[in-house]
Structure formats: structure tokens, C-alpha cells
Image (cartoon, rainbow, N blue to C red; front, side, top):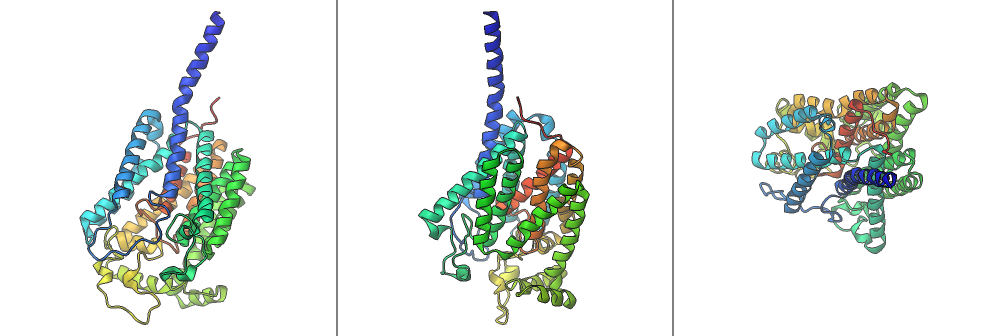
Length: 439
């Protein structure tokens, strides 16, 4: 009888210990799902705002504030303090300090600070996704299930309401008619997100979640193929291959070296092509559209404006679609009307425009340079390698995507939050040993 009671007591204690762990995993999965989906999915192309008009969104503001509060309370209640201390808050403090100082240069400092605050609140959810699961298995299950639910939702919408997930022939995006954009406004945003989903599928497969991981990879790649995003189709296998190369040879340093060579090459063939006739000639010999759908004109304009304010920049979220641009006269010879452009289609140029060249260098080093050093440290521990490979694969991929799209510190943009998740995650794997599945 005493043995029976003792056994029941042990069973009850295990169950009591498991319940908080299960709650953390569920919250992490739900958080990742919301980060990828956004709070306003299937909304289509956002309406243009007039200069001086508030770009605040009450759904985002209330929704993310509520989620941030829930995840903050959950982390304080469920996560050990030593884990929270390893989130790399010092680095993130520098990143947000640079951004906050830049708001002093903004056209609308209050609006810029409000946008930056939203970005910081979303980062609480990002952190929660990483630290709430009780072990690596719990994180893998949460991440894989979140991706699977997102894929099933989007594919279901392709059947029941295709007009909400496929570019139509109407409006300025009519040239993309038939391309899949999923739950996001544009295929160039959706394709990278579903590429990262496919990477999570690879991680799931490597973690033993074989059928779910394989299904996620297949559905993610099919989506990217149907998005018509040529750059993403090129960068996805490139990022996977760079990480796989280092893993095959057991040399993570090889991954970093090859990546840095590719960064230099891609930079030379994108923004470099508008600065150097030699690079432009090389690019023209390689691809059919050396303008990258007119991006070259945007880059030239951005470079001119950077030269006018190289040290301090124009302030966080305070250049495109502000009087600094909208007040200009239209250039009828250009293929784009610069006054209506929402970004510079290059994360690095936009960082220089926003934070000034010194601030951009600090920002890019912390967000894209230090994670590579973290990867080398994380790979020294065998238990960390699957997670390290996933996170560095996302960082590498988004480093390439940043050559053609802007996403740094972009509030709750799924591109930004998934990149931030990887940057934070690779830092955690460098400072901690991944906890194996709890018995």
C-alpha cells in the first residue's frame, strides 16, 4: 500500500511538473504562429497614406500590447532567471538605443518612437517563443506545429478564397497576376517567410519529427515555386547549401567563410552594380534584368540621400513616404515614382538612411556579424548543432534577402520577427547547452 501511494505521489509530482512545461510549449507554438501570420492576415495591399497622416494601427497596437503582456508574464512565471539572463539583452539594448537616438532626427519623433515601441513589444513575443519551451524537443514540436497550421490555413484559402492569397490583375501589382502571396500583401514578402517555414521543416525532420517535417518542406517549397519570386528561389537553396556544406565537412568555419564570400558577391551584383560600371557589366552578362525590376533607380536615389546626411540619417521610419521624398517633383523618365515607394528595397541602404552610416554599421554588425561568431561557438557543443544550423540558416538567408528587400526593425513584419528570432536564438545556443527531452 505504501509503495502504491508512493508511486502515485511520484506520478502526481511528474504530472505537476509537466503541466507548466506543456503550457510553455503551447504558448511558444501559438506565439510563433501569430508572428508568422501577423494580426491582419489576408488584408491585401495596404492603402497609401498622405504625408503627415498617422500610420498607427489600432489592431496592431492593442493586439501586440496584449500578446506582449501575456508572454512577459509567462516568461517571468515559467522560465528560469538564468535563461532569461542569456537572451543577449545587452546587444538588443544597443540596437534599440541606436534606433531611439535616430528618432531625434525624425520628421515625426512621436510617431517614430511609437513605432519603435511596437517593435520592442513584439520582441517580447519573439523571446518567449525561444525560452518558454521546457527543452529542445518541446521547441521543435511547437515550431513544427505552428508551421503546419500556417501552411494548412494558407493552402485551404487557396481553395476556398483564392482571391485573397493570389495576386490579381487589378492595380499596380497586376504584373504579378497568378503569383501566390499567401496571407501577406506581396509575393516578395510571402516567399521569404515560406522559405523560412521550409527551413523549420528541415529542422523538424532532423529532430525526429519526420513526416511533419517532410510535409512542411514540401508545402513550403511548392509555395515558393508558385510565388514567382526569382530571388527567393535562388537564395533558398543557396542558404541551405552553405549550411549543409559546413555540416557535411564538419567545419562550421567553412559555412561562415563561404557565406561571407557570397555576401560580397551579391552586394557587388546588386547595389554595387549602380556604383561600378564593371559590376554592372558583369551583372548584365549573368541575368536578363540587371535593373532588378527598377530597383537600381531607387538605390541610386537612396545613395544620393545618404550622401546628404551620412552621419545621423533621417531617423527611424522617417524617410520613405515622408515630405523628404513625397515633396519632390516627379521624375517622368524613371520607371518608379519615388514619391510612392515604401522602402529602399535594400535593408543596408535603408539602415544608412535611417540611422546614418555609423549607426548602420553598428546595427548590421550586431544583427548579421555577431550571429556568425555565435554559430561557431554553438557548434562546439554537439547538442546545440541542430538548433544552431536552423538559426544560422535563417540569418544567412535573410542577409541575402536584405540585399533586395527592407525589413530591419520593421515593427511586426514577419520577415523582421523571424530574422530577430534567429538572431536571438543563435545567441542563446552560443551561451547555453540545449536541454534534451525531459523524461
